Image (cartoon, rainbow, N blue to C red; front, side):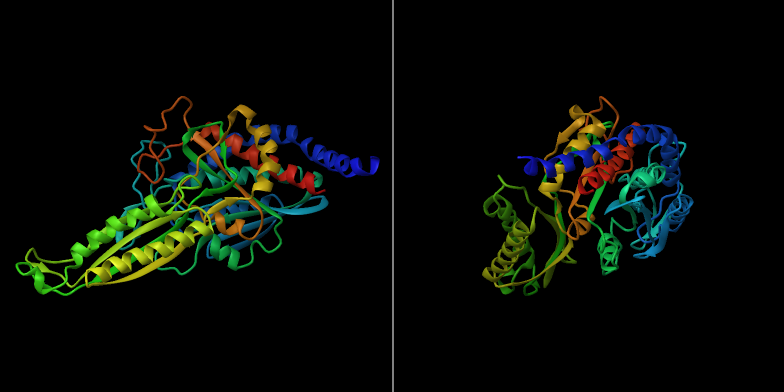
Length: 428
């Protein structure tokens, strides 16, 4: 019996040793809260688009160096990676924040309202942190300072990943997390943790989900080719506009009839239909573009297969031809169930059990998924809505009125710090 109990006692003792660092984390997080908010406001005022985060990256790199870290810059174009080596041997824990902003013109009247503009996709536009990446960077800078202040007590090392271009880069074949993985950032990582601010849940709360949490994002285009004719004699040609309309409706049956929605949702959205130039000419071709959202590789394969079958067969039945192209962008963000269960007590300790919520799957996407394919990972949603707010009336992400309650940032610092030291304690 003693032999059986010994490994469990050792595990409990190691975990307790790391958990004993929590009061120190709490104290340091509280002391740095105002600095985190100040950093965030600075990044918010001077946002930068994907692969253009030069100013942001310099501030991050200078900060990590000031904490005594080994820092690598220009990773995946503008990314920054810092290594904090603990005083004791142990695993390598990666923590990630994305740095890029969006081509959105801010409407909020704030002292730190965005002042930057840029040319995006050939158009002049405002630039705004309309998805909260400014808060992610500031929070992780805070975590870096907290953990650096206790590095001699850490049983392992921490890799701080400040990632560019989570929102994508027009015309680039690879970017963001995928490019960082290709450049070897995850090669020596044992576990990876990250969070995203969530404007539709209250500040001071954390949302999580085991397994598939956020959807895979895929883009598609379909070119439907018929036979051009006079609008007065449609029987003399093959109408690609009517065919395109039938395809749009047919694609919706994939979700309603082929996907087991009791397991996970899926979305097929046609975002644009382009074809024709004159009211009395039936054009030769029509183009559809849109996006697909799925959860997990198996569901993604099913939807992609049925998508191609539906589009090509409907076109064929009309005497037309459909050329289908599906571009995979981000895989589904999947929290490894075993690691999620293992770390849930740490999340609950950081936020308070009553402030930790099991969330429904989110049909938005995140390229954090690429990191999770290299090492077990957990991705969380940090509340950013004012307390008592109505999530249905609170401006959502990617909008000009997007706004965050900064009182929840300290919880982000505590949660990522707890996850790091507790994971190290379990592996010690």
